[in-house]
Every structure is written in C-alpha cells, then in structure tokens.
Image 1 (cartoon, rainbow, N blue to C red):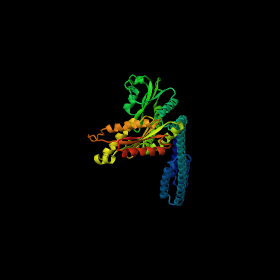
Image 2: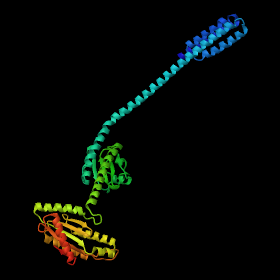
Image 3: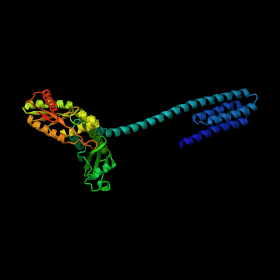
Image 4: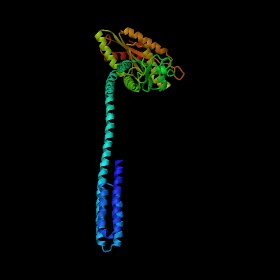
Length: 438
C-alpha cells in the first residue's frame, strides 16, 4: 500500500510540474529557452523516485513542447535546441543508469533465487541424511549378518548342517519367532499358500485372512520356498503369536538368508556331482579304476595295522568281443550295466565294487579270508550264469571268470594282491571260463 501511494505522489508531482511549465511556456513563449531545461527537473524528480516509465513519457512530451517552441520562436531556436539536447543527454544518462540498476537488481534477484534453491537443496539433503542416519544402523547390522551368514552357510558340505545353521541364523535375527525348515508343504496352510504363489508369503494377521490360511495355528507368519537347481527343496517358515510381527522388510531379510542357504545347497550338489563323476564310472555307476586303486591302498594299510584279512575278487566277462559282435555294442553296454548291478547287490556297505577297465570288474572285501571270498565269488558266478540278460525282448547269455587273492596270505601290498588275483583270473579263463580260481 505504501509503495502504491508513493508512486501516485511521484506521478502527480512530476506531471503537475510538467503541466505548470508547459502552461508557463504557452503563456509566455519568450521563457521557452529557460523552461526547456526546467523540464529536466521533472526527469530528475521521476528518477529520484525510481519511477521507471515517467522519464520516458516526460522526455517525449518535453520534446514536443520544444518542437513547438522551435517553430514559434525563431530568434531563440539555438538556445532551445541546446536546451533540448541537454534534456536528451540527461534522459539518456538516466536511461543508462536505470539500465545498470535494472541489471544489478536482476543479478541480485537471480542470486537470491539461487540461494533459495540452495537452501531447498540443503533442506532436502538434510532430510535425506537424517533418514539415512536412522536406517544406517539397521543396514549395517544386516550387512554384517549377511557376511556372517555367508561364511557360516558356505563352511560345510552337509546339507542338513546348512539347514540347521540357517535356522540358527534366523532365530538370532528374529528371536521372538518360531523358525523351522521343512521339506514339503503337507497340510500346512501357510506353506500351501507359498506353494501356490511360488514365492514368499506374508500373513500379518491370520485372523483377518482366514481364506488364505484357514485353520492357522499362528497369528502372523512368513513362508519362503527354497529352490535348489531350480527345483523345489522345501520351505523356510517363521511364525509368531503377535499380530504384525513381520513386515515387508522382515520378508526381504529372511528371503536373503534363504537364498544364501539355497546357493550353499546348490554348491554342495555341484560338488557331489563333480566328485561322483571323478570317482565313478559313467556307464556302470560303479567306482572308477582310480578310485579303486586309492581305496585298495587304504584297505591294505588298514588291514596291515589291524592285522585283519582282506580279499580281492577280479572278474572278467567271457567272450565279450563275441557278445558285442553278435548282439551289438548297445547290447554290450546293457550287459555291463546289468553285471554292475548284480555285483553291487553282493557288496556289503564296507565292500568296494569298481569297474577295473573294459569288461573287467573288481570287488574289495575287507575282513574276508580267501575261502570266504571264494564262496562269495562262486555265488556271483552262479548268479550271472543264471541271468537271462534280455535285450530288445530276447534273452542272451553271458558268463564271467573270477580270480581271488587275499592279504596277507597271497600278497602284502596293493599291487601284489591285484597281480595275484589277475593271474588267477586268467587261469580261470584258460581253464575253460565260467569258473572261480582262488
């Protein structure tokens, strides 16, 4: 209100003074050379009051008055022209000054706007850092727990131990919850919901979600499916008797730990698969020749320390080349697989059945003397002789020759017991095949 009133006073004063001077010039034209410079007072007054539009209007009107005077007062034209030129110079100087002032004011306004933007940015950053400060403790703890969990879960090659450690980790993280790892959904409504959804399920209050978890024996719960090699491998379940005990953050945290456990289980399976490929024959699934040599060395050393007997049976298929030529290599592979299964059926948990090479097999019998091993070999031979070995719906026939050697009666080292058993195997072959020599 004050600025508007001051502006009105400025305008009235400037234009009143200008009107008075104009009337004076009209009444007494001889005063024109003196009146024109007096118009500059109007310009100065307007500039002093910082009225941006009036100087331009007044300059224009003063120029018109001066033009009229130039026409009417011939003898005063030089003075009037000089006065008009001075008026224009004054107007130009005022315009330049106003331009500089406007530029300065604009720069100050821009600077003020920049400062306001910086203040808003600082306030936003301050709000963010306050929020970060509130959550950094939780995030730090989660990272630490994840690091500890990774070390714990990857530090074993036992799948059951991984599950046990996962339960311990989740119990430490959620001390008020009941934590369990189960192999299947069964009739559990929470696990069935996770199975249908194929992902984590959060129940904040089972009393209000009876359609999802009918007959639930908990108030709030979380179920997370476990997957190993993209196959279902069970569930992680957290339960509480308090409503709202779990939220999205708790679900994400538990899911992270469950995922780490799944990766550990996958690593165990990969290790077991690689180890089995390295120690087992791909065709027969019996132990490989390399595994046999290592195990025989261990058994000989054990028998030597404990002064207990050890026997070895070497087995070889009779006329295997003829069998392949007659029925084909697929039939030969099928024959070797069936022979391996028969040999494995005679092996005790402490025994060690292996494919020695080609159509030759071996069976390590700890704590068996030679007579006992010969009896086992004879039962194996008879069982194989009776087997029809059906291929493509037609029965075939195959027999095996067997050689038996024992520690320490026949040999005292692993290489010696293999050599003696192999010699007796070939003696059985040269003696007519389909027999045991021990």
